Image 1 (tube, rainbow, N blue to C red):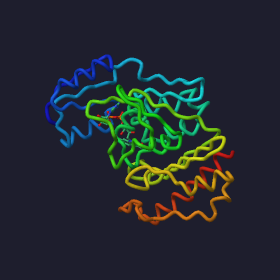
Image 2 (cartoon, protein in one colour):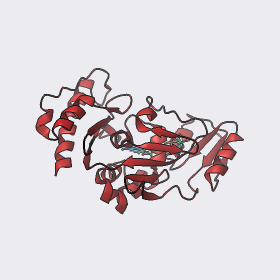
Image 3 (cartoon, rainbow, N blue to C red):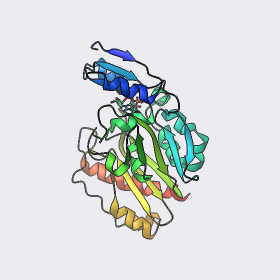
Length: 267
Ligand SMILES: Cc1cc2nc3c(=O)[nH]c(=O)nc-3n(C[C@H](O)[C@H](O)[C@H](O)COP(=O)(O)OP(=O)(O)OC[C@H]3O[C@@H](n4cnc5c(N)ncnc54)[C@H](O)[C@@H]3O)c2cc1C
């Protein structure tokens, strides 16, 4: 690890002001990605700005007359998976959070850190796309479909802090994850969300970034049942192919995970 200055501001404004005065600052929240990056000397920030002490960023509440769920960026995966509000309003999201990593990761890792990191195998990107999420920062709002630009790439500027994330509340939904047995990350993860007059299907782990499956969405919007998917063909072109799984296998996993997700959503 290289030397750096360490700061622990108490407000978002303080954190931003501080970062604007530093040469090359980096934000730290749960540290489950940032600390290994520092330990392996893959980054050499001049300053670490630990935002974990900032008040008000761990709240989970209903907003906009109860039509959207608001999750503070410092909410840990454990808090999301155990929140009564999340369990009641979007149980599939609570379930997704319960499937991230192991207990140590879930107790420390935060939704804001995970979303900012934009790992193509992370679980949350599928939920953010399927639940029409809005990512709110200290100076902007982004729609999920504009946020996951590419592998580990988002539109966030250097000193921008995610403060909270707003989710639409579907009529029903489900998340199915096929874990990479070595890392626990998603080899493939499929989130299906059914609304009154539409369906969104989002996939993580399979490609260089999370994406929506428009053909499946059309079929399921016409009729929300597993039989609607019988003719669906998932193309393997453009999907990841590595030592863990070929692109053809990932394409197969996407289809069977989506079928399972629809069955769960209908229960
Ligand atoms: C062993 C292990 C297994 C894991 N398994 C899974 C898994 O199965 N599924 C999964 O989805 N994830 C998994 N993760 C990742 C985990 O979810 C981390 O929590 C996540 O990568 C980063 O969150 P964090 O709060 O630890 O962020 P940090 O490590 O503190 O930060 C990560 C990045 O985001 C930036 N950042 C942090 N917070 C903010 C913010 N509020 N605004 C703007 N930028 C910010 C930081 O500057 C840094 O670049 C795993 C991690 C480990 C170590």
